[in-house]
Length: 288
Image (spheres, rainbow, N blue to C red):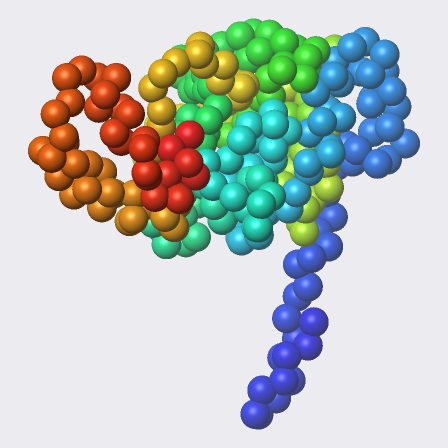
C-alpha cells in the first residue's frame, strides 16, 4: 500500500496477506490440510466443525479476537442474546458482549482469560475454564476430543502466537476439530485478515497456552463453552441495557409502591396481580 504525504510518498507494508508459517501449522485448504480433515471427519472428531464454520466470523477490531470468538460460539450454540441485534433479529456480534461494562479498554487491550469467562457466562453460556497450571496436556487432549466429537460444546483456546512463529501475541480462537493419528487440532483463527484456519500439533498448542500473560501474571489456558440449561423457574432476569429500562424502573420504584398503599392487598398473589395489571409496554422486553 502507498501513502502520499506532503513531502514524499511512503510505502507501507500490506499486512492483509501474511504467509502462514508452515511448519508448524498446516493450512486447512492445502492438500495436506484437506487430507487431515477427511480423516478426522471419518473418525468422528469433526462433529462440532460444521456449526462453527456456519457462524465463522472475523474480528471487527484488532483486539477483538476474544469477543469475536465468543460471539461465534454463542451463535453456534443458539443462545438467545440478552438484547436484539438489529430490528427484531437476535444475533451476537462482538460489539454487543459488554454485559453493561465499558468497551474502551477492550478495544485497546483486548480481554483477559478471566474477562472472557465472565462475558461468556453473563451472556448465557455455561463455562468450564482451565489454566495450564490447573490442568495437564492429557486433560486438554481429552477435552478437545470430547468437544470435537459433539456439537453440544465447543473449546476455546487462549494462547500466544509466537510459539507458532506467527505475528502477534496473545490470541483467542475456537478449536474446530481434532486429528487423532497426527495429534493435531484445527484452529479457526478469527483474525481472518491475517491467517486462514490451520492445523497445529496439540502439544504445541499446549505450549502456546502455557505462557504467562504479562497483563495478568497468570498462565493462559482453555475453556469449554456449552449452552446453560436452566430448570424451569418463576424467577426472571432483568436486562438493564434495554432502552425501555428507565420507564420500567420508574414504574417499579414509584408507581407500584403508590398503588400498594392505595389498595388493600392481602397476599403475594394480589401483589403480583397489581404489578402486572397495567405495566409499561417495555416490561416484557426488559424482563426475560
